[in-house]
Amino acid sequence: FWIGWLTISTLASLSLFLLTYPPITRGLWPQSEFVIMGLFASGALAGLGLLGYFTINPKRMSVILSHPLVILPLLIGLFSFAGSFLTDFPMRSWFGAPELGEGALWYCALSMLTAQAFVLKRFKKIRIAVASFAVTSALLMTWMTHQGAHYGLWRPYFFTDYLAFLSVFLFPILVYFFKLKKPASWIIAFAVSSLPIIFSSNRAAELFLIVGPLGGLAVYGAQKWARVPRGVLAGLLALTPFCILAIEFGLGYFFPPGSGYDHLTQSMWSRYVLITSALGSLQDGNLIQLLFGHGWGSFTDIAATYIPLEETKLYAFGSDSTDKSFWDALTRADFHSHSQLVESLVSIGILGALLLLLYIF
Image 1 (cartoon, rainbow, N blue to C red):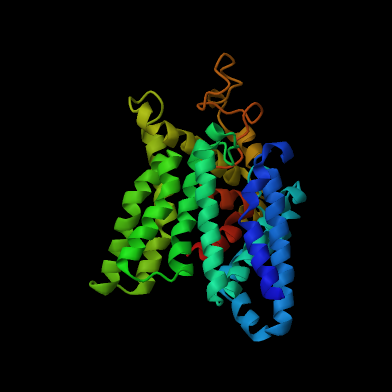
Image 2: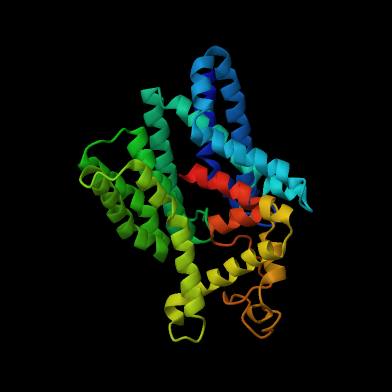
């Protein structure tokens, strides 16, 4: 019974994109609010199923619940919940911004859904069925977002570049759940998982199609031939978010608008403004905010406070309302900083960001 419960809960969580169907969407950001509520509900169903499975197999569940991929997001969620009472708006940190839903409940749901997947992976037929459903769901979302409107359907994603995130998870799902071991099968898995990136028109993700495999080969070669210890490799990989942040910051700082490279660096400049605004809020905050953050979902307020006036539409009244060069948190609300590292620092402070880094690596 409980395995069936967990299977249905997993399939339901993989079908949440159906909640973007326009006739049933509501809220400030209609493409996400019902999906976020569905995610929380799926996490709750998974938690109930895990509790039931614990009553019949406590030994197995104890092992699963102690796994870092389960316990770390749960700790992030609990830390976010506890730290929320030090912010001006605790409930916002529980639920996150309506556009994202990233908050205390989001991480708790992630923990439960991960533990649910660990339970189901032991059952071959269920594992393959769930993985097949996940891949089909991701590819269907990609097709509907890119071509669905031409066939009388709706677009699950408003921005096609968000599709690229699906590829990040598709490849490990294909390899891990189908237990692929041969190089040829890995190549096929990479090709399939690359489809969302190809249709996303996300330049950074397209670059990843080249850098990702090369990085994987470099890590493999460092282990197999250079005999580099795993601990050293893990430490180098842990520097990746900081390197990316440094590149974004450097390109924005050294190539601002008017430098002659606007067509190449406009996106980096926008991230530079958002990142410096976010870090400015930490610099001006007190010790409590530095350690525990401002709470999830607070970035819109931070942007309204710290983005320079010359970068806002309040300064350029005559600009087109769709001009992405301007922010004001009123006609255009930027709800995240485009950097998970910076976002976590602002939202849950240094202590919470350390937990997130542990989870990633």
